[in-house]
Image (cartoon, rainbow, N blue to C red; front, side):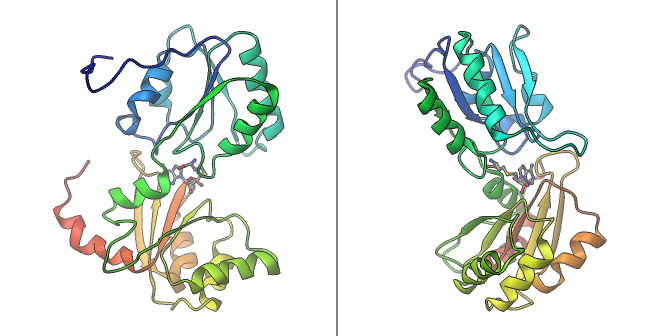
Length: 263
Ligand code: SAH
């Protein structure tokens, strides 16, 4: 890459037999890290998830093999253990393997499990962080994750469980902190999560925002209140992937959005 070498020391070569676990950011290729671009231009084999934007895969070398390891057409996703086996097998063949994940590999990306499997298999690996959707999507909608006026902490939560008493109580405890909650993967269990947050003490008129397909051409932003969230998400036909923010920081959008340059 043509970058000043005094500021960007040489990029580490991706050696045969290595696996790089790389975050691809929220979608827009311009939000990739330079390390991610370097990895894309080096890899022999790329194993990617459904959330990786197709434009990003076009940065791969023309000889690179591209493997899809996500959910397709409603079929169940491949088992995590199968993905681990595949990555390890490719590395052992002496390939330079890029395991590419949406957002950041260590934020709800199972990167931790894959890294552990690589350690156990004795395969050397490198982690390249990415911009997580839970922070990028709200930011691009004019919602700061924290501001001094509204919150001193922020909760990143995976929304797929709220269906039993223990899971519901966990949501109530998160809500009871009063700190904004940023939800990933929450559309399927939204009614249960919202009910638990209300029981946990959040007011029904707590501000909420939903950002779906952030940075894509089909991006949508919906603003509402906690109590109306499940209804409004359904009524507006919001589809996955979506990030949901619940908390007072959402109000900042009204101050910031009017001045923000459109992408
Ligand atoms: N490792 C990823 C998260 C994987 S979990 C990261 O750090 O971003 C998948 C969830 O991420 C989706 O269900 C959705 O909640 C969120 N997500 C990923 N990309 C998104 C996008 N472009 N717009 C909105 N939400 C997104």
